[in-house]
Image 1 (cartoon, rainbow, N blue to C red):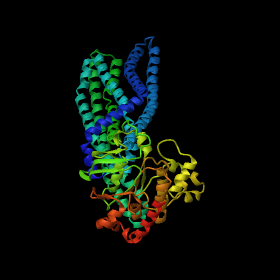
Image 2 (image 1 turned 60 degrees about the vertical axis):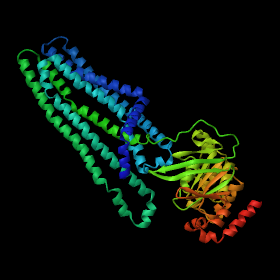
Image 3 (image 1 turned 180 degrees about the vertical axis):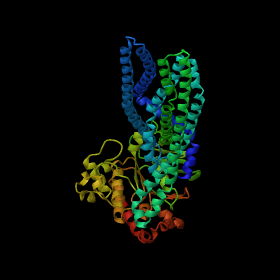
Image 4 (image 1 turned 30 degrees about the vertical axis):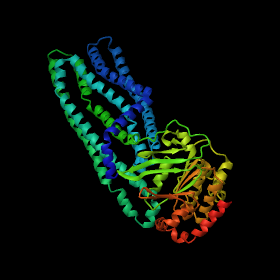
Length: 602
């Protein structure tokens, strides 16, 4: 994770901590019955462990006195020991189920938070970091509900053992209690140091995972550039820090264990010494001394408590990583429906968008008539893609509002929005098992085979799809495609679900000029009529548009037809020259304009 991201996480730490605790509570409720059973079994096993010294001590006294009831109490000893073993086994089995269900719940919550936010918020976390949050960290966090149950049960033997010592002999109990403050200090220091080291370890782990996924995504570029060694070094750069934090965690755990291992024998010897004196004085019996020693061992069982605390601390730290996805602001939807058969009139009122403290779009106000095609042009960095995202509500403006057929997009239901507003991108990602699934992917009922073919023909994808081994039934994994072919399938997907508003964000950039013009003609004549927002770099796209929105530095420089802007604005012509299109396409501008005029006459 980069330093800015670390600073962001630090600033959001309190909110993320609260969100993590809420997520853990939700995970515990999701397996409430099983978690309660774990707690019940663990407590019952602890009660059996507490009963064992008393039963053993009493049985020993009976056997030493040759009491006839001695054999019966021997059976009781066996029953108590067997119950403890069986209850521990059941608790272990249930713990695995609780861990699995809690992990699944946390992953679903994290994934839901990731998918309900705007794409630019989701992009705060690198793909590798997000994967680590939803896998390794969610798994660790999923252990918390059962770990809390075990930790609570682990407190019962020490506390119960101290009470039992007091009941057996006050002086023996006091001998043990003199070391309790040291045990408390050990646990407190362990919890504090473990929390810090685990948080640092997980932070470095996220950063390393993010770099690894970046390198995997750019494997061809790395191979072509011959920078494999440099990338390997970059990915592993923080490995020493990861190792250092890992060793620190084990040093904290080992140091606490070592100190407790030195303290416990001292406490046991103190109990043994005082108990021996009390035995010689006739105040307690041999069985009482045996029970006192066993209870002293239980009372000093800091190892079980330490292990439980370590699991809870690790899990809570991991939950904070997963819960960072829950803190992403949701792109909420309203309950309004769009008017039936609306023409797709789009209106932007004082739209302002801020990113990283800087205003990227400045107070844009614009009305796009329903059914028209609008080309959004401008130099690189002018805000074209962000304009398209706001128009189709992939993100919300920080000020102002966007309306479709008179209804603010914030108030439209999610179903209506995604049914009536479609998108196509410059680098589409294909979802589904087959090529046909990729084209039909979207909200609403699945389109039929004919609808898939119509959309593919409009996008110029049908010829190459038919050449695939199984046509539209070819698995995506078995269909190697060029960037242009993938882009055609992305267009076909948008055409298949075309509503009253279609946003094309540089969606023909990888197509050759002939195919791009065929797609433009299909948009005009073969796709459901509606409003088109086209982020344009090609001159032909601007020529064929009904209206051109010219952006410059996030502001509307001018709005008009291409012909008007081309004749009267030299800077407008320079926009296409800057993108390298004026040289080639500028020479054919007359030809393109003539073709557009001919089509209009038709």
